[in-house]
Length: 210
Image 1 (spheres, rainbow, N blue to C red):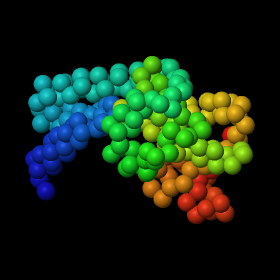
Image 2 (spheres, helix red, strand yellow; image 1 turned 135 degrees about the vertical axis):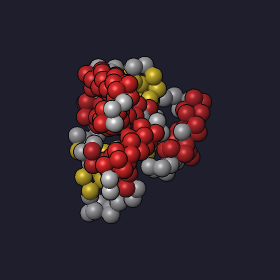
Image 3 (tube, rainbow, N blue to C red; image 1 turned 180 degrees about the vertical axis):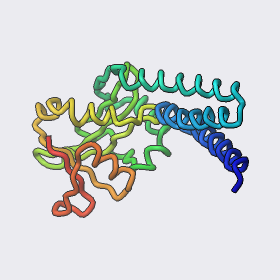
Image 4 (cartoon, helix red, strand yellow; image 1 turned 60 degrees about the horizontal axis):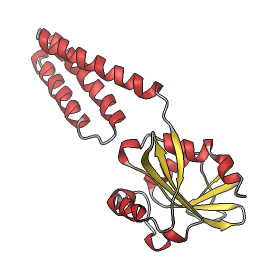
């Protein structure tokens, strides 16, 4: 492969990565992937002697770095909002996000209003997620729905619920969560949140003690 062909393939690679970044629903993922693409594009521009292309992509890379820095250093405000059992908004919310929710878990519409704990999770006063639990036993809450809208799927809400709000659930008499799933994406999330596989309870059981 000649040097010119290598440079051409670098350009194709950079273009592909930039295009892929635009498909991301998560702004953070978009910024990271776009940063990689623009950095390669800047290198490509300088290698072929096209300084406008090189400097423009250096600028794009710096903009991505700036916004990523803001994302990682900014402090979000999180809050629970109890859901009224007759809430029509909850039905609209779940129906609107149904397809994305069912990528991770079954959506028990018939049981939603019978749950023991039903909460919207607000992020900067925006309804960013729904957390619904039912009583599994005297000390255990079964997680029925733990969903965060695409724009906020960066694990911050999960950390808020399962780590920073443990006292909220302990005051209600519970000291652990249990979730049943075979979904690999859901299992990955549960492990990130500190759940451990408990095959002695059930082959598909994952438990987090608080």
